[in-house]
Image (cartoon, rainbow, N blue to C red; front, side, top):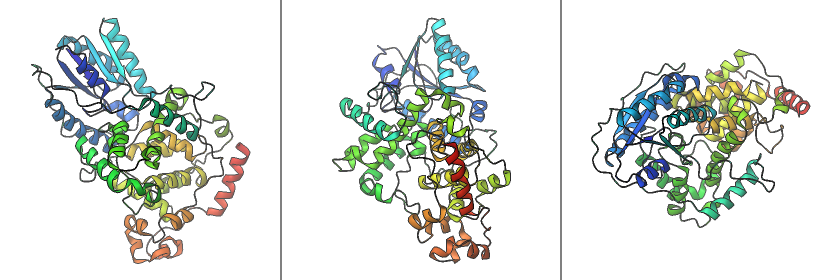
Length: 468
């Protein structure tokens, strides 16, 4: 027997571990395994919505595997510490001689995988790891001095050169194996996950499965990709791919996304499409985790800057931000979208994060944890990188003085207040720019601003200026 261990790679196409296990099977049956680790999820602030979505995609994967005659076994462990022994026990029960998996790059996962590999090797069992979560293997995109890139733009240019040289194509679905005498375990319909925040997976917003992900990709590539750069920042428009939840559980891969963009968009310059840049950002943050492991421990990429900053301990300000009751309508609308759906438009992620760190002067780690506890697409690398970027303590070429003004952002990207009225219904009675007027907002039940923007901005700039 050969074991294939699924984690956040819940797909049968373009799955390097599964493909290679199948190619090298020589008639030896393959058995899939997934491990439920609720205590570990709690430690890592996994949102309840994301856990339930992952579970739903695991059920879809089980059906896809069944079509290949590959049974799926379900193990239960409280935390990563129990995973090696559980996997070894399963290997012994099945008389398996090898384990295949795709690498994950966060430190928690790397330590888990190292422990599994060490235990299996001690018992003379082979372990094979593959890089299927990124298009270009972390640690291989380097500058002329052979050092890792610390800024996105030069990384992106070097990444595109590597991609063009290698031109990695998605792997096909492996061929079905002969029927196997191992019985699959049922995947639970739901899981009681004792998360501090009971965010909800809305299956009508995010239907599970790789087929759904590929349908969304095709629609995006055919109808939206050409105008993506022009429309992506307008949250009232349905102009983005909304594929991030599927990417984070691995129902679709970044390589498949680029292949779909190339095949369906009709754009000969698809590699320079701005959506491609967003996928490269995802790669960049994974590469950073590997090259700068201290980031995994929530340490800033620029410790010299953060060491001279002072974060506010005013919990009332943080609580108002969490509830979407700051009195700044664009910020509040973004937070209410997150609370209601488990997802937030990317422009609003930047606006709300900048507001919390630069204007309320709250520690970026608090915001990062709050996002992870609510986001259905919560991704440790991207979330961490984005929050450090917003707080100007991350891998970013722009200095400290970038502060998003909620009013200016609203004027540029939601001029008629369509987005804010959607998520703050009491504003619907107002028209256009009236929806951003705090005094008019107060007449329909909205709170007054919790800070003076001009004063807060000035103080923040002074503080960051000294720190930089």
